[in-house]
Length: 250
Image 1: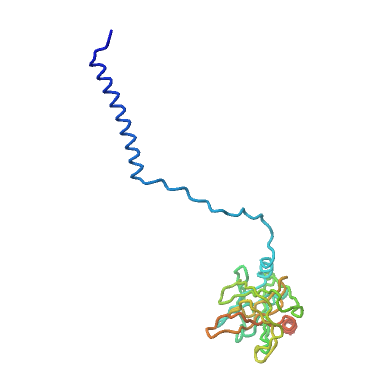
Image 2: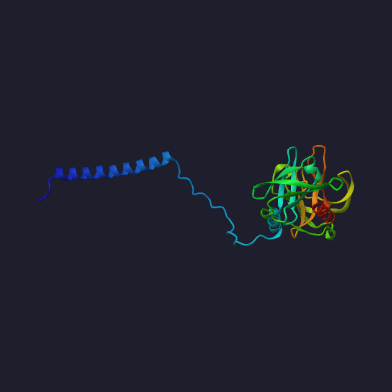
């Protein structure tokens, strides 16, 4: 039996309503996205090198790592400087001007531990002094080299506590040998270097690329402002070592 005409009209109206509702829903979703703004682009991944395989230190990094445990900060009531361990009996070499007027000082090791030390003796003319601590087992002696084997242009490291910044390492070259400068109370020859040396480096070691101590950092040529200008001086270890031995014996 044929459906009444009115039924077909109602069905068509329902279909139109459904289509209109779907279109409205789509338009609403689009409108919402437009109101929210465009989605942010994913963060760009910057190119990075692959992690390097773990390996032991080489070059100057290895040199610094080998010497740093032997270097100490030296603290007095009125001044500060650096020093380095020279044997397994608790002796530390530094500059005489660092400990001038003091009989006891404090040394700060690379790991931050603090030890009391006595001034075993000093040579003011050579600007060298030897300290002694009661617990040598906590110290790591440095390896002494030969300053006579140095050549102009050799790479060196200066290690110490410039401006109180302990464990500071600076690099440079040997700029000149047998440079005459005033040390202590007289004029002496010294190793000249452009490794950055500042107040507080005094008494610390100048080492060659093998990590051997070839000098004791002791003085700088400074501009009017007092800063480093790339001219530093170290007492040659060939002269410093016998003086240290004499102080220790006596």
